[in-house]
Amino acid sequence: MVPGAAIHIDRLSIDLGGQCIVGETSLDVAPGEFVCLLGPSGCGKSTLLNVMAGFLPAQGRVTVGGVPVTGPGVDRGVVFQSTEALFPWLTVTENVMYGPRLRGLSRKDCAAKARHYIDMVGLTHAAHKFPRELSGGMRQRAQIARVLVNEPSVILMDEPFGALDAQTREVMQREVDRIRRAAQATVVFVTHDIWEAIVLGDRVITMTAGPQARIKSDIRVDLPAPRDQADPDAIRLYSTIRDGIAAEVDKVMRRQGLVREVAA
Ligand SMILES: Nc1ncnc2c1ncn2[C@@H]1O[C@H](COP(=O)(O)OP(=O)(O)OP(=O)(O)O)[C@@H](O)[C@H]1O
Image (cartoon, rainbow, N blue to C red; front, side):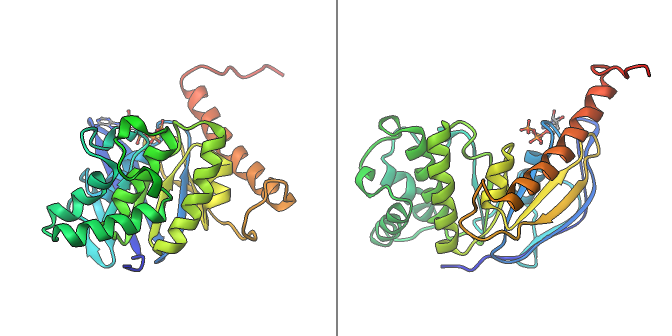
């Protein structure tokens, strides 16, 4: 297993479609850290993640394990919200073997690696199935196994559980917590769900509303594991984060003329 790598973002700004989406932003993520990214809808969370993945260019500097990011690489695995990323004509095992095969590993080594990561995500019983035969949660597990098999030092997750029902989402949160400890990777996890961020994150980072979004707060989650939503400290943290994001949403609505000041 490859240990997690540090991510270093230095004075990054991202322009898309002639607009500055993310204004000058710097951020350091320590090796093995799990960082959750929250913010108002459309502020640029996915865009920032896509730059870390090497899918989008930007001004400034991003390094992973000290190496500048200039494009996609196997050191960074990306898990998307959509489970369409799986190849529908391949079984779970074949999907998971795909990356290592592409990198030239022998069929035997690929099969052994695939088995290991399929076991890790709890899909042993469904290894021979096709994506259409899997539930949403199982498909997400398969997607995670397909990323882990490349043994990335950084895992970038873009609302991976956004399309799942509440119960499956909770199960998957516990699973991701277990898997990331086993895999030791550094994780950046985009979510809309404040509780999800508190349950999973070592740090919760919130962004301001765009355009020119920036980091608004960077909070270390110093709560015992497993995190308990009834813990008064967790509830206080939830309120702080919720109020911060609500203030940003309010700013956007005022800018768009959707909220009128009430005359005194
Ligand atoms: N390829 C693109 N070209 C132009 N603008 C883009 C492009 N991709 C994203 N944007 C814009 O960048 C902004 C940020 O989008 P992004 O998807 O990163 O936000 P987000 O915070 O992840 O949103 P959400 O929480 O709703 O998923 C939006 O205003 C979006 O319209």
